Structure formats: structure tokens, C-alpha cells
Amino acid sequence: MKTLFKLFFAFFRIGLFTIGGGYAMLPLMEKEAVDNNHWVTKEEMLDIYTMSQCTPGVIAVNTATFIGRKEKGVLGAAFATLGVVAPSLIIITLIATLFKNYAENPYVIKALVGVRCAVAALILTSTYKLIIKAVKSPIQIGILIAGFVTVAFLGSSPVAVIIVAGILGLFVFDARPKEKEVKNDE
Amino acid sequence: MNKILLMCINFFRTGLFAVGGGLATLPFLHKIAEVHPDWFTVDDLTTMVAVAESTPGPIGVNVATYAGVKSLGIFGGIVTTLSLILPSFLCILIIYNFWQKYKENDRVQKTFAALRPAGLGLILSACFTVFMSAVFPETGFNWHCLLLFAVFFILLQLPKIKKIHPIFFIILAAVIGIVIPL
Figure 1: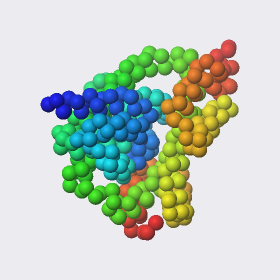
Figure 2: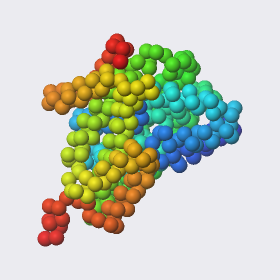
Figure 3: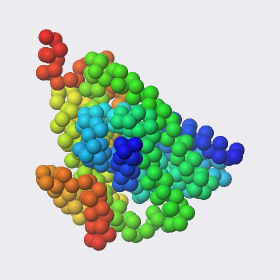
Figure 4: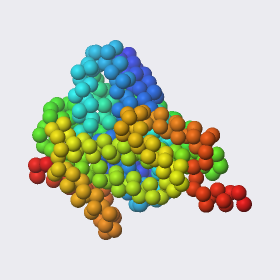
């Protein structure tokens, strides 16, 4: 029971401070699920995140369901998922009924400009650490750059990038770093 | 009752077919607005997205809640939100079982070795989008934002600061945004 509430409130905090879409939750999730509660390792978090991008639904919800399921079964999944959507439910209901001009409020606009600067710095810090950990072989570096360039500059769909990378990894080449290959051959 | 059921079906479908994050729900919501203008209109959708992007929480969930509240009040918001997340909830439970069973499998490992850098490339491009929207807004280059970003980024590399919860930085940045004209 204690873990269920822990899951709910950890994901409630994540939902409450994820401003600007699912990707902004990465630094928060790293803090709550990896550093503070040890529900998943850094690599598992990255795997879950990647899978969440090519499965139906909102990324933040998918990730919450996955981590909740891993930690405490189906009930854990339900608590984590409800936790991540509860802040939206409360805040949006308030805005839609009471503060209809919220998005045009000058203070909101100003605060959001500041938040974007911090969120960009936070995501970059988390991503950089993950890249050092998970991207080692030249092929992996190539995929990273190709993924970034096609989505950021050519406007490709993120889903397409994940699917292509998955097919390449499964059928075309082994992207794992060399040391591991040597071990497997022995 | 009929309206509620119809809403459930519509948002369930949106949750099931919108792959790749919150903004992927937009084309589906657009369709709903066209078919059921009494729920919410295409014009409402613009406001919803503006609100969803400037409030905490996943954008897809925010838009769904807004649409539900707009057409059926608080109860509607709960209905649309739960309908939207139900398909992904079920999908992830199924995927989880496969993952548990096969994550040590050699082929799965091989696939993930290629998926991880791709996933990181996507996160990096999302980060780039956030960065560009702050530093190069429609009004031109904003060097205050570049400076603020740089200060945050450098601070975050310090070992002592790394331990601080990201929530602190987000609140701090919101206060800076209001107090100092960026």
C-alpha cells in the first residue's frame, strides 16, 4: 500500500511539473524513478521511454504505466498512471471553468519563457548523461545524429525514426559496442 | 448517456491511434470537432492547444480534459481523460509482459542497441525545439534567454547542484521569467 501511494505521488509530482510536453518529464523521472526510489535503472528508463514513443498514447502516460507495472503489478500501473494525469485533470478543469483567458495572461507568458530556458537546460543535461552511458559504438553515434537531424531539421515523424532504427538493429547490423561482440564470440 | 458513451468511444479511439506523443492526438481531435461541433469547435481547439502547452502535464491529456470539461463539465473531463489513457494503459501492460520475457534475448538486445540512440536523438530534437522557441522566438533573437539557458546548464553540471530536484529549477525559472523581463 505504501509503495502504491509512493508511485501515485511521485508521478503526481512528475505530471505537475512536466511543462511543455512529454519530453520535459525526462529530468523529473530520472530524479523520482531512478535516483530517489530506484524503481528502474537509467538504461531501463531509456528503454521504456523509447518503447513509449512507438506505442499508442501519450508518452508520459505510457512511461508511468510501465514503471508502475514493473514496481507493483497492474495495481501499481493504475496508481502511477492516475498520478501522472491527476494534475492535468485538476488544473485544466479549473482553467476551463474559471480562468478562460489563462493562456493570454502576461504573467503566464513571461513565466513560461523562463521555464523553457530551464527545461531546455535540464533535458540537455539528462540527455547528455544518457548519451555517454548508452551510445558507444560508431553505428550508435550515427543513429543518434541521423535521428536528431531528420526530426529536428527535416521534420520526420519520431515514430518513423524509431521503427527504422528498430528494423536496422534487428535485421541489418549489430550496433552494440565491439567489446561485447568479442565476448559473445568466445 | 448516449453522449457520454459516444465521447468515450471517440477519445478511446484517439488514445489508441495517436502514436508518438500528445501532439499526435491533434488530427483526431480535429476530426471530432468537425463531426461533433456541439462538443467543441475547431476554433476551440486552438485555445485548447494554447492552454495545454502552457499548463503542467502531458499535452494530449490536457487537451482531452479540456474538451471533456468544455462539452460536459467536470464529469466530462474525467470521462474523456480516462478514455484517452485506457488504450495505452492496456497496450503497455501487454508490452511489459513481452519485455520481461525477452529483454535478455540476444535479438532484442541487438534491437535495443539501435533503438536507444534513436530515442536519444528524438529527445535531443525535442530539447532543440524547446531551446529554439525560447532563444529564437517570433520576435527575433533573445539573448537574455540564451544567457539564462547557459547559466542553468553550467550550474547543472556542478556535483552539488545535481542533487537538487529539477522542480526547484522550474519554479526558479518561472519566477525569473516574471521578475526579470526576458
